[in-house]
Amino acid sequence: MNSKQAIPLRRDIPAAGAGAGSLWASDAIAEMIRALDIPYVLLNPGSSFRGLHDSLVNHLGNIDPQMLVVLHEEHAVAIAHGYAKVAGKPLAAIVHSNVGLMHASMAIFNAWVDRVPVLVLGATGPVDAAKRRPWIDWMHTAQDQGALVRDFSKWTRSRLPSPRRTRRCCGPSRSR
Image (cartoon, rainbow, N blue to C red):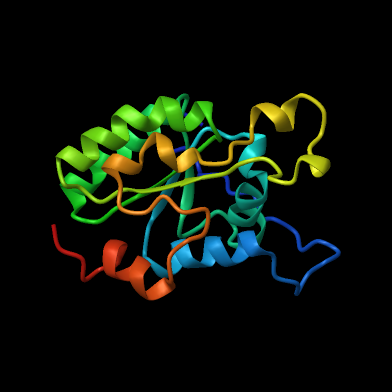
């Protein structure tokens, strides 16, 4: 190949697993992101949202939305903020529990001040202390992570709002 030829894009196609045909909660969240017509999901891969990461890759094939890997949660939200300003529609940013949300909080504040829609999703460890693994789950679990950004965000619940409310906020008919 000479330097003027385009390098073909490599796309890994996931194979169906043993549980093909079953639907996980993370699959439903991934499908909602797709239904909102969000083309990209920005994230720094991690264990606190491994189920959603898996669903984006294996359930949706990493297409619509496609994952964009970033080095920091604040970058994820800032890129989503800039994209929404230019394209007029939001992107999603997925942040790690606790520390990831703390890092992203300034970018979330900036998008809020600018009145720009950004869908920020987070995760936590097992809320039931009896189900937590030693050390790691204790660091990645909080009773009220939303408290970190509640004063400058629309929803901070542990459950997503109804699909209708989510579409009203993030869907094609939203207004700024």
